[in-house]
Length: 308
Image (cartoon, rainbow, N blue to C red; front, side, top):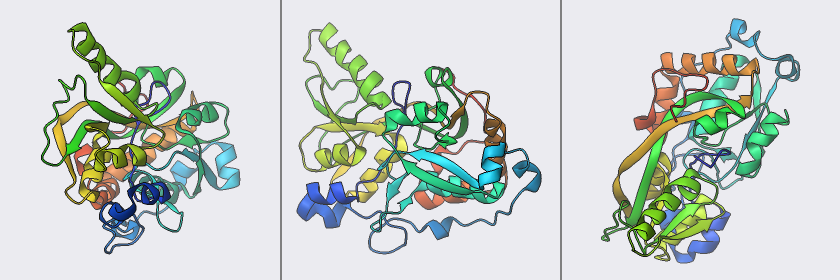
């Protein structure tokens, strides 16, 4: 999630909220689960690449993490395929699989704590969480608050109802769904709407939803003309929607995802080295391919790698 200084994107619409909204469409568009089958979501086991504890790297962990044996991770769900819940309520997804592998490498157990997206970075700053994991876009604004350890690359991608044509660069007067506090909500859509009104055209009707499931459902049900979200989120939503929605335009404004950690924390360099090891040994690629997001793979993990 990109969020304006506090967040960045990704989600799936197979949760309880989606079921309630979609009704008869549930069988078509729901389907995130932790095992392969008719639901369509990949098995987390399918992304397994052997990872053993790196004792030298684990020794560099902050004392708090080493002594507890736990890595406390703040996360906001649902944001498929990156982080969402299976039918049993377990948090799963691409991001989860990666952090679980990091835990194996460091000999610690990730403990996922749900929170509002906008509250995760402040909680990291307060040391309530050791790190955040919620498709956070690494940008200069966030880097003023926390250190960001990059692990993936994503852009924005619009979706439209199948058979309809919506131009993301000329959506004046259109109803466009976004998840609140994402970069699409705070930066992209307001700027595009202003361009419309500056040209004497109708503003974009920005429809804000508390979670990505609701934004996607609004599009599937025809309540909006389009939606904008992070590229892996949109791609996964299209795949799960059974042909009801499709891409509108190309991916744009690509930027890295990062894990926020306390500014200057010893955890940042350890996470960066752990991510790099997962890149080098192919584990991260295997996980990305399992979830169908391999287009966002990076070759080098960085601390504070934002360009804007």
